[in-house]
Image (cartoon, rainbow, N blue to C red; front, side):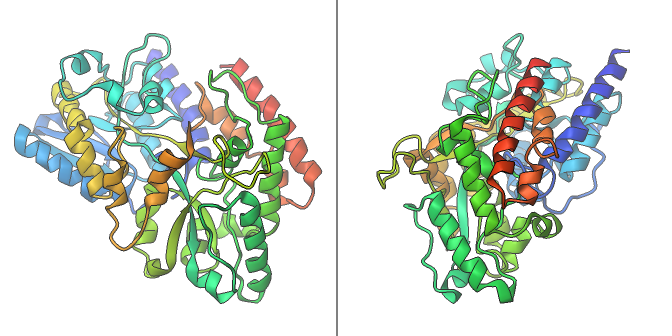
Length: 453
């Protein structure tokens, strides 16, 4: 009976999770970084002495397999890393949790971690960590550590794999064509609006838009504006929200203005922001560090450049002060199945990935920024010919907030995209009153969802 209840709970959660974070640029390293998926059944292969590892980002496969192969050379245990696309990843994991076979080692995400931990589906790591000289949790980003610690007993169920930040990506060729100055680190969101308006007007005959925003991509999009204006999607104690406050409404009014000069949501829904940008039809997007390879490897990458996220000049002094430029950050966790036949080997591999050596190599290979503090410079130097320092400077020159989550994040996160919240404002950004009402509705949706957790 317990397995059946777990399966039903996770099935409902996964359905919402897919809606909240599907596709190639979702909620970050956060996200649901896509890529071509290799076939995989996700099952454990302990009998053959091979650890089965599931991930969802094909861009990270080569680097992670290289690190895993180094561990295999030392341990004598083979590692097979399977790439499963975001939607099928959770479907397979849920199937394994409800009576099938889970992979030995896999990624955990902020949307789902608490449910997997509370249902005892993950291998507890406290005893392993206590005996492991390579792992000191104080060396990792606190938000990522706390995310993978179970609320009711404080047990650690995953180690921080990485963290990510957000930056503004722009196409220099489009700016040059329409005679608009490039974005700089001194830009405000008003500057984004004004530049987008000029490009969208000048590029109308060419089908070019000044900006593209996928409203469903919150971590790499509008969440950042909320925090810049002094509001919070979820308060620090995970028990409330200020999205309906005056600050939250001011932020979403800025988002609304930008949407009036950006690609319509009907176009974004059909094509996607990344594809619009890579096709030369959008001059600017915001995107997470986990997606750099998508643009670095594009044939037009010489035209691409990154700037720090714009800020909100809330005090009107013309300078970016503390608390006016935020970047969301998130982090995946390396977890193991509670039912793996190779628990010691599974933890050993996780420890290798998360050790200082493994974290530095991950950064040097351009896989992602690490979950360990102090190694981001390694990542910034990984993309020859493309300056990606905007992502690392977000930590040094701006402020970070951890991607908002509660016990059942996907319940309210999915609801915010529906007709009772922001959907009408996304579809018709011409009316400020619609966006203001959406903020009030969002406040209640989040409060009610938290009360029901």
